[in-house]
Image (cartoon, rainbow, N blue to C red; front, side):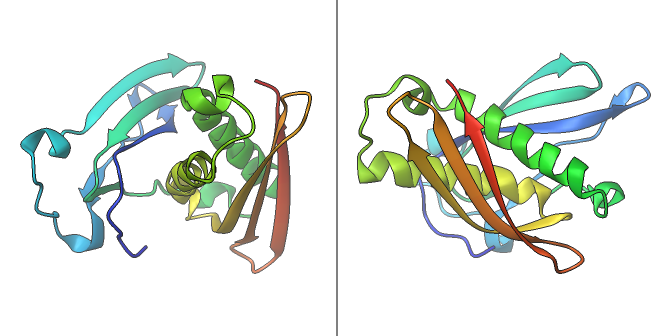
Length: 168
């Protein structure tokens, strides 16, 4: 993933708890190097965690210059129903975390839509070991529901368009 300068993002990621130890959230420099931060406060990465059933839910405030190393989801690579479930869960988790998406005014500005789509692209990159994301698009309907359309490919090369509806 080519690194571009961006604002800090708040993304939500899940990790399974294997026995007593959850899978890790591992941070790494984007493009293999840390960007020179103008203000040390810009370099702060905050992580909070919550347990839900067999998963840990991490909320990560990710500054520019850092990225999350994708977790190894390959055990689900050929279970396309599970892949769709993981994509859907990631979308729902992250849409709930975006307050302006949930409670914001409609119509969105182009900046709000772009920010939401960028946030979701970064969060969905966590699933890159099982699904390659090509694009994310949002539509908001009159009833307030959100339709997220993801285009990408399973690791077996099968191209898929996945539409996930969310009612805030």
